[in-house]
View (cartoon, rainbow, N blue to C red):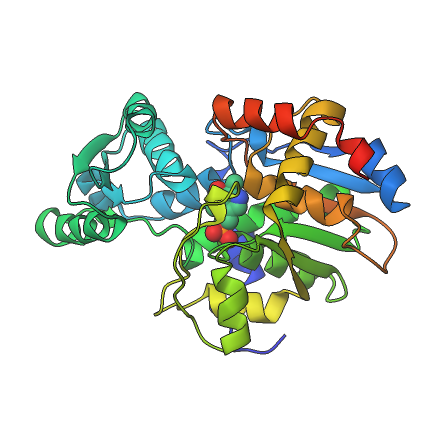
Length: 333
Ligand SMILES: *Cc1c(COP(=O)(O)O)cnc(C)c1O
């Protein structure tokens, strides 16, 4: 590993693990007999769905917020994500008794606003777009001294997500392959760093949806690019990587061996498969990882393989739709 991406190191991940231990529980790793049979090697699922907010993002948010000074914590934190990151910031802040302001545009649906409110966050409605909400966040930073908690491109956030890698290594010291859903790359940067620090030969595969795969296009272009967003079942994987990306673009370049693009149909079948065969609800982003195995996209290699099941936040209506239209997924295999 060269020194370029050394801003975040394995030491930061161990520090993160200690820092977040009081508020983040270790998650289960279970063997999937049916996926193991299908792939002809042991397949494990790392269940990040069991966090109270249903996604791994509490790890990064906790590590970042706990690393702030007492004075910064007293002033409070802010962010402009309405998805899993916003929920994570709201949840962690509440656990610690810190004020959190989530900035959203007036287009954000009421269900999302309500679940953020339930987590105890203050909501600031501002403008018509995600960009407007982001601007409001920066204003709050300037005017009231709130700290903006970034969703992925931050050393503490990356190190927090990396604690997943340490937990996997404890249970699977011989792991050969890891499959990680990929958007801004905080998750892959952290987990990739943890695993490759243990053994460079562990193969790290990122999975994105083939609709608006910003990291994929950025890697191809050799620099961060912007894309229009298309609707996808893997909505947690939407969003840019930031044209001024500081950490994750370099770290994904360094720690990822391969990237796979997954179609909407493959994501839908994988969600139905998990529901029917594992009796487990997972969201589209996590299903992209399952699809990599289910659809025979992982070839070569042997030994233990793990998939990061990154979240379970999917609406009941989407789930019912998928269960209706993509049931009997084994027929499709
Ligand atoms: C945020 C998120 C991802 C992607 O994480 P990045 O750090 O942005 O690459 C994957 N799955 C779920 C459920 C998420 O919420």
